[in-house]
Length: 299
Image (cartoon, rainbow, N blue to C red; front, side, top):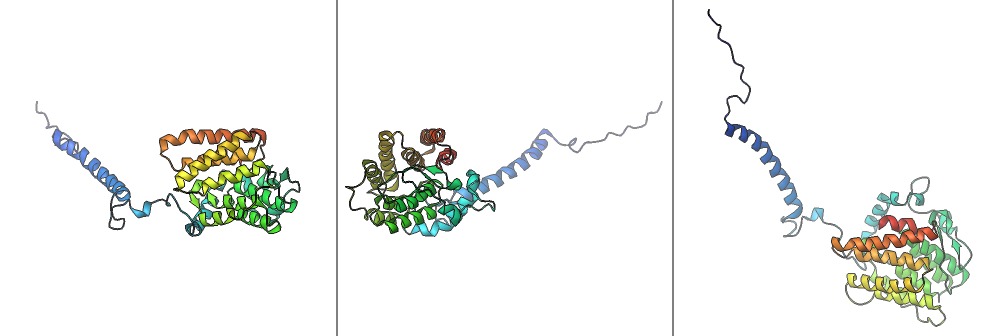
């Protein structure tokens, strides 16, 4: 019986040796790896533009920016705030605008010891020795500080010292508004100019003097990381001394986050945990405080 020659269908690899198959597999893997390594190198190694520094296109904002450099970064900071406004959605109006309206900013309380700063900003208590009118602007400024509305805070503190030229805490507020710890930005020149206006503290309460004493470390001698740490240590003393003072708790919490910005990642966790715990404690005591949930989110 004659058998027809059967035809064998060859697969694409049926005529390849084991080495040939290996080459077919390794080749695309090699080129893919080469592309990934090349892209990574662009981001991390020298180029003519960077002069042996990481590629400048991918650089972050400088760690420490002081004095006149603050004004150069204003547009970037405003865009950052708007891009991240979902961190505090209750602070945007119906149009999604981050900045408060003039009506919102003018909606402040009239009591020196407990002022409502509109539903947009929250409720805080920060007694001072200033006049009632100066106190109204001051409370608005402090609430704006906690919301990271630094421009509005500075304007409010400026108004407070206009109506009371001897209002020491108004000048303290100006110095506070010159520091943006989470962006590692300071306007030292403006802050020191404001603090120099505080000439007589004899009529202030001890609590006010303690706040003013603490901020002196923030704008003292040395590099910014050291000054941030010294200020945080001073605010810790205020926080311990006045356990019922929610403002001391808030500013101490924020100072811890500021210190964390200057250190390596492994040591950040403890500071962020402590800052968040303090903010949550404020939230338990006053859920409407502008720092409470806001600082807890950032921590």
